[in-house]
Structure formats: structure tokens, C-alpha cells
Image 1 (tube, one colour):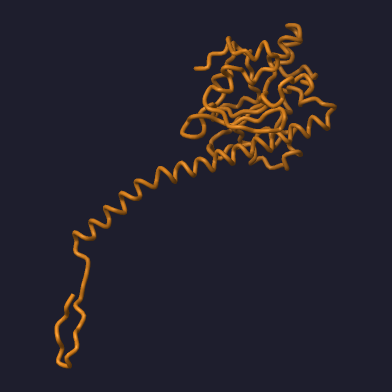
Image 2: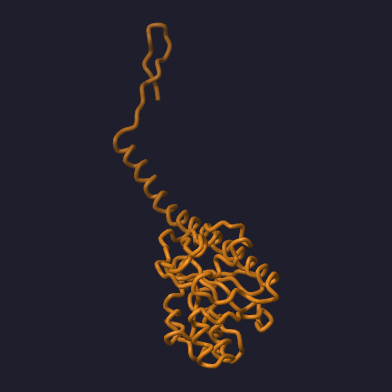
Length: 245
């Protein structure tokens, strides 16, 4: 832009400024870019939470393996007072924050009896209740005692024939205080407690397995075509499980 000539023969720079229209155009461009970037940032944030949750479950799976190694190959007995979060407490570093998925912050299970710090902590996960195995191996009275938490014999690790594909821990719905994933309690009521859509835009959730690993599964694929919560090959066939539940 040409300026005017001063008395000394020099050009004075003309003053420039944005017009209102130019400012509005810039603001509109910024708004468009923000609208394009926000979904990507949101997905990246949720992906980070999913990975953090998966790491929590991996640590809990390792804690369960350590517990089994220290207890003659047995998982914690089903108890009405002292449950698995307390049993694994030392093995996951006594950090109860590990029990809570980063994607939720409002999970406060109600517990009774002489509850421990770990058992009363906010918790996103529950453990396999091993219903298929004990319903097949116990009589009706002992199975009722088992479900009530008074049968002191627990599951032996060696009976799990597919450790890399048998779930030990999964995600449960918020505000549900269940400690055990019970396939055969009240016609499989815990299928409704199981949270299968917490991550990736409500498309799936995370699971820990008996071999100490942890993986993400899409909605319903932990139950169909094979029920990965069951132990025996017969019970793993998911004919009796509604994948849409």
C-alpha cells in the first residue's frame, strides 16, 4: 500500500486495521476448525480412558494370578463379607483407585458386614462367579451355600481349560454393587449388570482373563458365539445366552 509523501520526501506508512467483515470471517474459520477438531479430541480422550481402564484390569489380572500362586492354586472363596477386592489388595499395590474405570466416577456399591477399605471403595469391575462349574459339580444345597457366600471351597485354577479365553474380571454398570458375575442366578440376571458398552462410543468394554491378560471386546462378543464367562466347553456354547440382553 502506498503512503503519502512527507515534507522530507519520505513515505509515511499508512495505518491498517481489520475490518468487521474480516474479523467475522476469521472467527467463522476458527469455529469451523474447532467443530472439526473437537470430535477427534473427544475420541482421543476416550481412547486414553479405555487404555487406562484396560491397564487397571491387567493389573488386577496379575494380582489374581499372584493370589492363586500364594493360595495353593485357588481363587478367593465367595464370601458375604471379605470379597475379592480385599483379597487382591496387597497384590495390586493397595491402590483402590485401580478398581475404578476412568470413564466413570459415580460407582458406590453398598456393602454390609465388616467391610474392608477395598471392598467399600468405588468399583467398576466384578469377578467371575464361576456359576457354570459349581452348578455342575455341587449338589443343590451346597450350590445354594456357595451362592450365599458360606461355602468355603473356591475354584481351583487348574479346572480352567481355556485360561487365555476365560474371563475372570469384567466391567459392570454404574451404581450396581455386584461383586460377582453370576450367570445362573435368577435366570442370569447379571447379564443385565454387565456393562458391555462403556468404551469406544458405547461399542464395547474391557475384560481380564485367567492367564493374566486383558483385552477389549466389542458389544456382546464376550457372550456370543462363545460365552467366555463359562469354563466347560458345553457351557461355553452360547445357545442359552441372549446376546442382546
